[in-house]
Image (cartoon, rainbow over all chains, first blue to last red; front, side, top):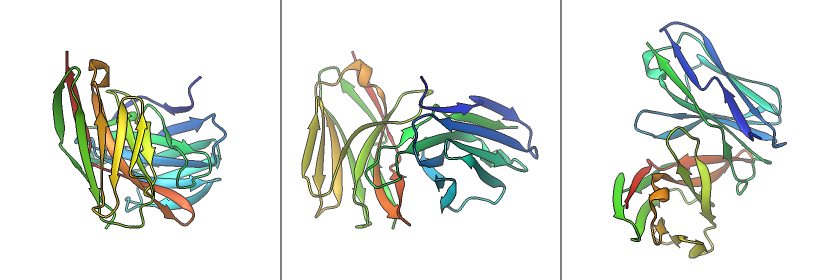
Length: 114
Length: 114
């Protein structure tokens, strides 16, 4: 059984479009995250949610809006897509979001903006 | 300064050899140091982690060495195998508003030649 799942796995779209990426975890974790991995493989946190509440919001354009309908889901909606948004986006979760809790990552969504 | 610097960017080791990847940090607020392993097309997965009050941690062929005064830590892979070929990320954890923030190094692409 997949612990952290993301859909879709691949997303190709035109500049200016709006798209969403869905994430679900079946681990019973309280905390979920979104990361962006650029073409150089650099991984950077974007958002962190704990029990549906936004905890961390890094310097991310407000075109990116996370939504947590319940603590098992954290979706990422992106408005007015730009070329620079092309990257692999990873969702992750951890038990309580405590410092030494392991973060479990999803398989990633490769977004290509044309 | 919330950065973690990782080197080398890429590494080629012969089968059976020792792979060594180094990381350095500045922020003394970091208090947990995990290493993640990422295979192509997959999300990062926790490999091994160390607390700052420990100088070394070993799990099988993987060892973390930690030097708190120098703010440096390294991953050693003994008897490296072709199956170890992957991208390795060091990371450091800080606590933000009670939640964890994971800061990644730039990644090392490790290739083990048979």
